[in-house]
Image (cartoon, rainbow, N blue to C red):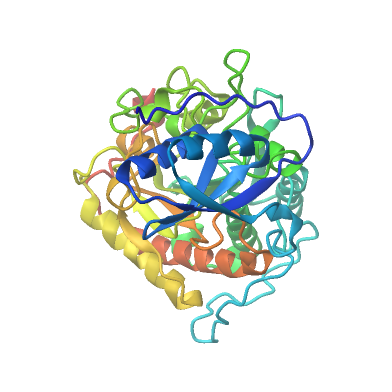
Length: 432
C-alpha cells in the first residue's frame, strides 16, 4: 500500500477551528512515514514523537477523515483532549511553573520601559502590534522610523521599524518573526527587543548603537491575522492558487535553491503546509524583505528570523549538511547566543547547521540571506517550547523575551570583534 496521502479538502466556515489531541501508537516504519505525510498535508500536526508513541493535534473538521485513514493503516490511537482550546491551560491562562531566574543570571531587569500598548504578558493581534510600532516612532522620532514596505494579497500593510542614529558607517541588523502565522512568540520577542533598544538607546554600548536595526515583527500579516481570528494553527500566508489551494509557506519562497526541493518533496505540493509557491519570490511578503535588504543601501551583517518551537539556533545551510564558508564563526556566534540565553533562565538551546539539527528545507530565508545577500551572521532561532509547541503559556512570554534579548546582546558583542569569510560589504550599486 502506498504511503501517499490522498488530498483532503476542507473549507473552514466557522470562526474558531477546534483541535483535538490524540495519542497515536506507531510500531512500524511505514506507519510513521504515513503519519509524517499526514502532517505535511496539514491534516494533523505532530506535537511529540517519542519511543513509538506520537502525540498529534487534529483539526476538528478533519477528525472523521483522519480516523478513517489511521484505521486503514491499522494505526491505534487514543483521543486525549476533545477540544484543546476549551481549557484555560491551553490558552495560557494558567501559566506553567517555570524556573525563576536568580539575580546573577537575570541580566535584563523589568520594567524596561513604559509602552502603553504592549506589556508582554499576552499575545496581541496585528492592529495592536502596529500601534506599538507607531508609538515608538512618535515617542522617539530621532531614532525610530516606521515604514510600509509592501502590501499583502489581502491588502494589509507590511510594516517595518528602523532604529538608527543615522551614522553613515553603521552596518545593518535584521530581525523578523511570524513568517509562519501560528508562531506568535516570535512577534513578542521582536517587539520586546525593539522596545528595549528604542527606550535604552542613549545608554547602550557602541556595539548596539553602531547598527541600523530593522524590525519586522509580522512577516505574514494575512496569516497572522487569520490565526487570531479563525484558525489558531494556520501556518502559511493567504495567497490563493486555484479554487481550493490557499497559502504559501513563506519560508520556502526565497530564491536560494528554491527549485532544489530534494528530500522535501512536499514543498512542490500546493496542498502541503510547506508549499513553496509557483516561483521564487512569488509572494509580496518575501519580495518586500528582499527589496529592503538588497536595495536599502545598508550593508547588513546580521540576519535573525524567529520561529517556534524547537529551542534551537540554526544557521545555513538548510538543504545540505556541507559546511558553509563561515561555519566556525556561525557556530561560535550561535553558541555565544545560546550561552547568554541559558544564563538568563536555564533554558538550553541547541546550535548547529539547520539541515543537521532540524530537517531538509529549500528556499529558506537564512539560506537566501547568507547565500545571496551575503549576510555573514544569518540565524534562524526556534524559540520555546518543545513541550507546549505553538501554544506557549502566557506566563512564559516574558522569560522567553528576556532570554532572546540577552542572546542578541551577546551576539552583537561577538560580531563586532569577528571577521568572516562572507563579510564582503556589498554596496547598493553592486547589489543592483
